[in-house]
Image (tube, rainbow, N blue to C red; front, side):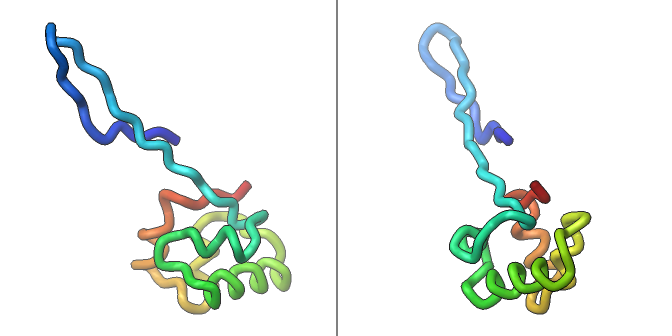
Length: 86
């Protein structure tokens, strides 16, 4: 996923786009050590995500992560751009 975060103007009216590359982490494959890189996710919530996945199977849709204790609507919106299923 690439977001264009700003335009840069140069001499002679050339314009180029500065790209921001956003890495997405798989909810169904990531280890605790990867999940803690998500904004607002610490070691305990990351561990709960892994445990939930082990008990209930893979997440079927991104919104299912809200079933994990400690992840509500606000945190879900915060991590949404950075998560994927696979």
